[in-house]
Image (tube, rainbow, N blue to C red; front, side, top):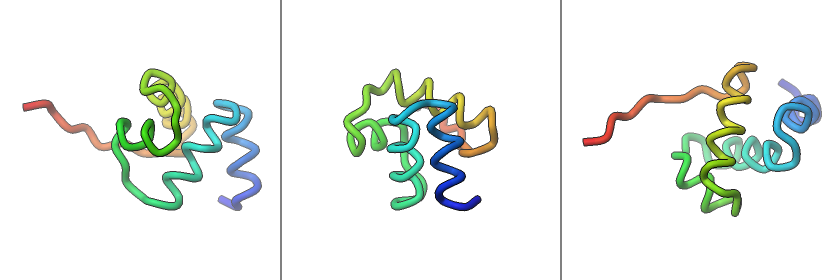
Length: 68
C-alpha cells in the first residue's frame, strides 16, 4: 500500500497514534507490543487497542506467543 494512503487509513482507524505505530513497524519490522509502546511513548493498553483495530482491517499481522 502506498505510504500516504496507508497513513490516511491508519489515521481514520486509530488516529495519530496509529500512524506512529505503523511508521515504527515499517521502520523496524516485527516488534512486540511492549517494544512498540516504548518506541512510540504510547500506553501499552492503547497500543493493544490500536493494533486490534489495524489487524481487523488487515493492516498488521500478529504472531501469538504463549507465556511460559
